[in-house]
Each structure stands twice: as C-alpha cells, then as structure tokens.
Length: 213
Image 1 (spheres, rainbow, N blue to C red):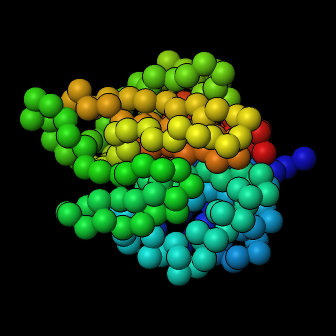
Image 2: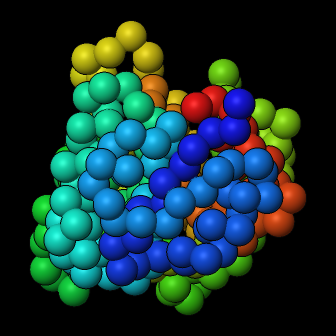
Image 3: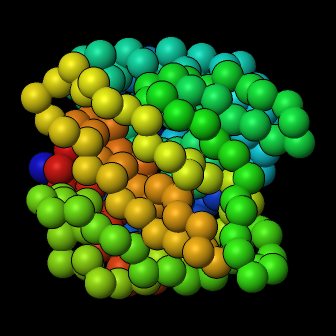
C-alpha cells in the first residue's frame, strides 16, 4: 500500500525538492499546513532552512509543534531535515539570542566551531559514523551526504530515554568539530544533512524511512 506523507508547509524549507524526492521513492505526498492532514498522515516530514528562530515562528504559527507532539505521543512517524531537525531540540542559540525549540530532545543547537580556519557555513559532502542496528542507513552506511549549515548539535544530552528503544545517533565532523548528523529514536527521525540533495544515497535513505511507515 502506498504510504501517505505530509510535507509540512510552514514557510521554511525546500518544499518542492522534498516533494519530488519523496515521490521518487513511491510516497503519496501532500504539501500542506492543514492540522488534521498533518496529524493523520502515515508520515510527516518537517523541512527547514535558514534561522532557527524564524523556523520556530513559522512552525508555531501553523501549530506544527503541536502536530509533532501529538504524532509522537501516538507513535506516528516524524522526519525532520536540516533546521527541521534542529528545532526538535530544546533550544537554539544564534548571535547570542536563545530560542526555545520543540523540546522533543534535550540539547542546544549552536554555531559550529571548526578548526584550521575552515569556513562557516559548512557546505559539502560528508561521510557519517553510523551506529549499529540502523534502519535509516541500511545499505548506505558508507555513503556521503550533502550538508549546508552553520549550526548543529555538538553534544547529545539525552540520558533517560523513558522508552524501550535506545536512540541511535549518527555523527560526523567538519574541521575536527563533531556534531550530530542524524538521529533514529522510535517514531522520531531526523537528519542534519539534506537527503533530497544527496543523490542516490539520499533517495535510499528516504525510501528506507517511507518503507518503515
């Protein structure tokens, strides 16, 4: 049966490229901010580009934070991409300003601190350090993925999972600075990189997620 996926349209994100990427792997995609549609779809994809604070403003304006929480309470899958991943954490700090996130995970999104005068933003292809037992990266553990960002989660702070499933955290580095590249935590999944811009490897990752719905 074809899986129905809502791509949440809250004014931030690569909406059309995300839509095409999901269609490519066989999902029935609806781009909408409709609350009921987002709550009831088989899967919800939360995109995001730009500033953390602006994304949170847009998300809350369409009650997207409530949608995410309601879906996860019911065990219904959510995938966040780029800033759509970052806003799932407790807070973001940009230019000295702290903004509350969705608080699905503890932790802080902060500016990358690469060594050797590497430029920020980080733009380019990285391999990632994938944990054992991954579903998201099945068959693509050694592939590269496309990143474009200035901020990231540099410390994983969740210690009490309150669930039977231990989160699987994928890491990568830029200029020696280690940060979270992806998380698989029961129904909540997220990537810092852009699978929709990551060629065949990104398509396989999205296919793996859609298949799990």
